[in-house]
Length: 111
Length: 117
Image 1: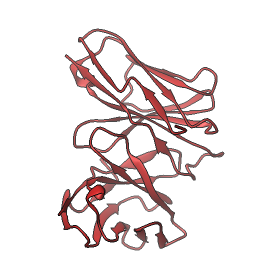
Image 2: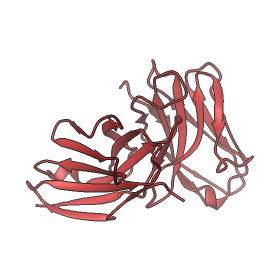
Image 3: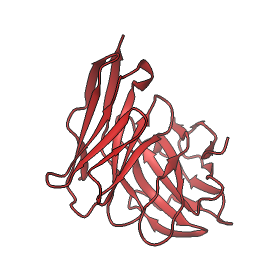
Image 4: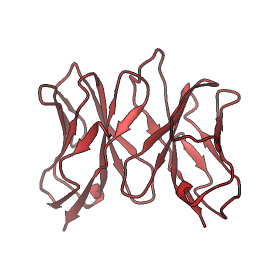
């Protein structure tokens, strides 16, 4: 089975609000995580990554939080915009060079 | 455009035909990956190259699938005797790095959407 999963398959958010997308992973050996955004018909787009020696990392309008105790990852998007509507995947790297993806969360931004 | 490039973007083929896809990674990246994505699912790992060496193949990659990266630059993925179940998005990604771990970001191309009719 998959070792990376998302708590909710869909998320609807009002434009301008903050979004929080959650992801649970099961392999405690995973030490590198990436969030990707995928728009319809396109490939996954790198958003932000985090290593297991960190618990928080910030980018432009995005923050990733890692809680290794409960094996939980989240992506926070500040001031969500219509262009943020997409499917978001978390991916984990388990002690080698490949990524394991969950099924994704579809984010819809309401105007 | 200096990102990962895939060609073609779309391919419709009849069952039983052979198809070949091409991936051009980011030029300085020594690692290249192929993934497959079906509707509503996340990408699934197929195979991995470090330079020209193919270091791992997933069990998803049946004998009808073959991938090459002859000069350590571009890669091709061939599917022989296509089946309807092969219909999916085929994604290529590249990254840099050494050692046995993925420790730098992997960037994906736009994918090749295969439809087998």
